[in-house]
Amino acid sequence: MDRSLQEPIARLADAGYVLLAPAAARAALQLDLVGLEGLRESWERLPRDAYLRDGGSYRYRRHGCFVHTPASGTLAATAHRPHWQPTAYNALHGGLTRWFEPLEPAVGASAAWRQLLGSLGGLFAQLQPVACWYIEAHQFRIDTASGIGRPTPEGAHRDGVDFVAVILVARRAVRGGETHVFDARGSGGVRFIMEEPWTMLLLDDARVIHETTPIQPCAAGGVRDTLVLTYRARGFQEP
Image (cartoon, rainbow, N blue to C red; front, side):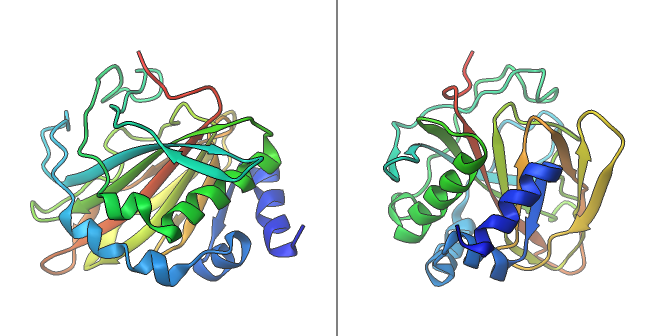
C-alpha cells in the first residue's frame, strides 16, 4: 500500500478521525482536483432547505444516494430517495422524512465525482471490510445573508453511519465555522477551521462526535460550501 494512503488509514484507525490537506487528500485518494473544481459552480444552484426546524433560511442543499462495491470498485446511483435519521442521532431533524432535490445529473455522472466516492469507499474498506457501502451525498451551502449561518444546527452529533467525509468546497467572506471533533466516549477532542478548498475531514462515526460552529459575514455574499458523504454497511437509514 502506498505510504500516502497508509498514513490516513493509520490515523483514522488510531484516533477515529483524520484531517487531510488538499495535497494529502489528492495523493491518498488519487483525486482529480481539476475535475472536482469543475463541479464547484453547481453549488451556486442549490435550492433552499425547506426542512429547517430552527426557523432559519440559511441552508441550501441537494442529496443523492449511491451503492459502492469495494471488491470490484463499481459505483451505482440509486433511485432518488428521502433522507432520514433517527432522533437518537439528530435531535432536531430526526424522525423526519426529508425529500431534498436530487443532485444535478452532470454532478453524479462526473468521472471526478465517481472517483472521489469510490476512492473513499476503498479507503474505508481497509478499516472495515464490507460487501457494499450505502453512500449518501449531501451538497450544502450555508449563507450569511441573514447575519448568521449554522453548518450544524443539530449541534454536536453522530450520523448513525460507519464513516463520514466532510469536504470543504468553498469558503468566502465569513468568519467562524470552527469544526470540533470529540471522542464519543471521553473528553478528548480537537478544534480547527477548514479554510482551503478540498480539505477533507474523515470520521469514524462510532468513535467520534462532530459539529461546526456558526459563521458570520465579513462582507456581502459570505458562504461556506461543503460536501458531506456518509458510508454505511447496513443499508440506508430508513424508518
